[in-house]
Image 1 (cartoon, rainbow, N blue to C red):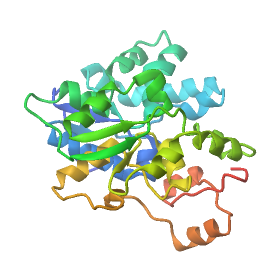
Image 2 (image 1 turned 90 degrees about the vertical axis):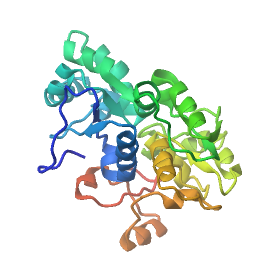
Image 3 (image 1 turned 90 degrees about the horizontal axis):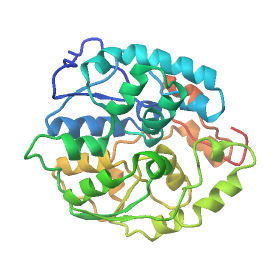
Length: 304
């Protein structure tokens, strides 16, 4: 997700401006998350900008030990973001793993780079921005519903979820935040050959049973793309939403359906060809084909 050529760019120096970080998952797989975040942030009085060139946090290379490449990727990203960094513009992350890179990994990889250190201080979660920096008098849209919430491992370890819990409370969400540990997917771990059984065993320790026990009319929330993927593909019959998607649904002023409210969310559907391949057990994750806009799927029992 980058800004369109004809879109007016908000002034980085304007205190109402925020820069939305376009993570790969929100850009190519669940774009409804980013669209929802823009709607809610604008409702709170912010002018939302997105980078005008492609950027990446480098997590793919960090998680596979390719640190030299990760540093080069981060360097290119800093070049794109520099005008926003110099203006002190807050950068808003939707994906916990990307947010954790900029808050923790990047400063450790490039300790002498002042722009990286500056970015770490300016990078905020979606909930932190709304809870701590929205104009006085703004209140989140009300949902008045219950939710089962899976906290991403990077939220546990780096960003924490205090702001998310308070934002959900103010929005009227009766949140049951799971203390069930990792969803089991763990980034690319659950996609890799030989890891499927262990990945699902971890998920069955708590996360997947809790989702199955969730009332049909309650929400299932997970800010992390990997957690949403595991829940959807873990035989739960449910799809988890990002908190931004839930708040955007509340803005529409409609009552949530009594059965599977996540069906209101904007999510891409698999093509007929994908469904046939999935039914045959021959799907693969199409991360490399994301730029073509195709819908992805996976057969985690075979090599990615």
